[in-house]
Length: 334
Image (cartoon, rainbow, N blue to C red):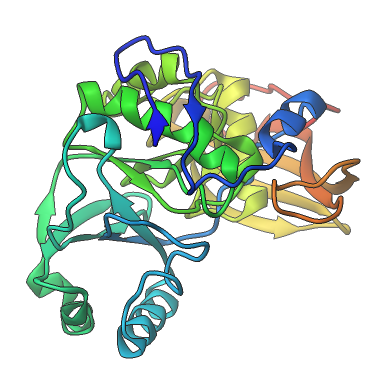
């Protein structure tokens, strides 16, 4: 079992003999920290998030190894492709001391900017999911409560469990009804990964000691850019652009700087326009994509080194607005 000291201020260290955490010596999250891998613009693409309660144990693949009947798997896969949804298994943190249970809860979270929503439903068994998804709005109830997902998927990558579970434990002490452990969210090397719903904000390298402050700030309508990987609704260039606009204007508002559009320019360069509000007007951010070779694997289970995509900031400019403010920046790494 995993030994977790679940309390506010827990320092994030843990020991493990859990069979769900593969016994490997290479840790991708440690290597990524040593390389100082940038994590801006690495949020997985998802217009919606489909969450289904499953107490575990979780296999390597969330859906394929969940033990569902083939027709259930097919229905979930078709629903996700149709709705642009990302499928996640969820369960309560073990730190709560509750026995593993499947109460049949599921949720559909829409991350569309300006139309964010969380809807919860319940089924008696997974076999009822196809029927529920066929009429999901009718069988679910809207909720105004945010949802905090912490990747703790040890069978997928050891770092997710070792770094994620302390974060889930810390959040469960203060926000037990909002906090869930979840399966792979992408970016194993950025563990601990935290997803803030309904906005689809994906955060990386969140320390257990900072997690409570991070979610409380989010609940108050602000985002801490220190940990933000991106917003899942947006394309990677748009994620990078929004991040750099936040830094340039010192703008923490979760709903601020809405992306208006993106236009590809020369190869690897994208200009993204954002709504800066009444005073800033339209903001143009130009980012450049490049690939960087890593000397070591990007995940704990990868057999060889690979390359990572990063975005460099070319410039940020307010192209219209009351004050005509120009905050052009050049050459900043993304």
